Each structure stands twice: as C-alpha cells, then as structure tokens.
Length: 172
Image 1 (cartoon, rainbow, N blue to C red):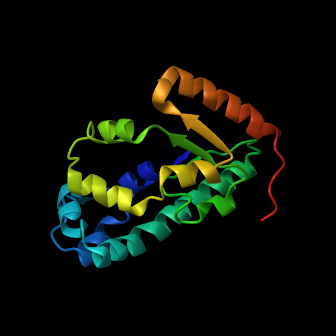
Image 2: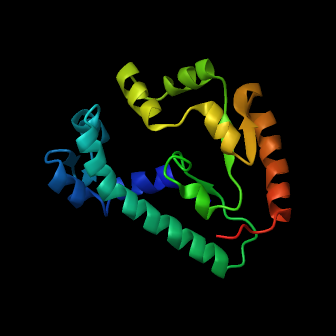
Image 3: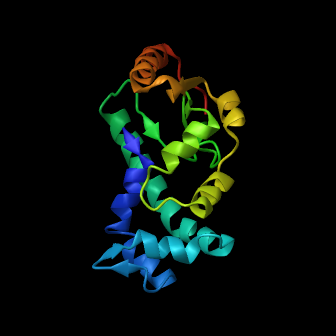
C-alpha cells in the first residue's frame, strides 16, 4: 500500500528538508521539518501553501509512480493508494477504482480533534482544501462507512477488495 501521508512524513525527515528550509527558513531542526513551525508559517497563507505544495507534491507523485511501477513489475493484482486529496488533485484518473472513507461530519470533527495539535483554524484549513463529503461519495466507486466502527469498516474493505480484484482495468 502507498500511503501519501507516510511519504510526506518521510520526505520531511529527509529529501524535502533542505528544500523546505530554503523556502521557509527556520522551519527545520536537526535535519527534519518541524511540522509545528511549518504549519504556523503556512496556515492561512494561500501563497505559502502553494509554494510548499510545489516542493512536496512532485516528490510524493514520484514516490507513488515508483510504487505503482514496482507493483506492476511484481505482478500485483491490486495496488492500494491511500491519498487524502486524490479526487481534488485529479489522481483518480490513475486509478481503476476509487474508494472513499466516510463518516458523518460531527464524527469526522471529533476524530480530527483527537489528533495532537488540532485547532479550529487548522481543521478549517484542512476542510477548505477538500471537496464536500457528499461529492466525494458521489464520485467514488465504493464507500466505506466508518460510523459503525472499525470492524464493520474492515469487513467492507475486504468485500471491496474482492470486487476490485474482479474489475477490468480502466482505459487511461
């Protein structure tokens, strides 16, 4: 599985660090990006966010393409991409099927505030970058409803994987 968030974390501990430090001085420490400092620098600043995305997104795309190439070389029947802004970035065009994980808005908000460092401002900035949940659900081939707990969600995922394994590849 390719986890875009995990790739970003890894990039912030290595390859992207000097590029981010050059663009946003004093946002790194000890050879890694200080996510709190970087967040304070870019949150609410569309120009700064765009600049950060110009640094990070191409590196994430390269990692995703390496993952997909390796999956194809190894003959994998299914390659899973966990990409938070897949639809917003047009990445769904690269996928044979799109699965959206969803829960009611109040549950999403409560879960978000369980994360360290979450604030109203940070959550608002995150949500502003996302398309509405109803639109994501409408565009998805499959929806995993996590409102009934993770055991139910895991069962849904198993069924989705079975269905995806039987699907023909889309023409790109």
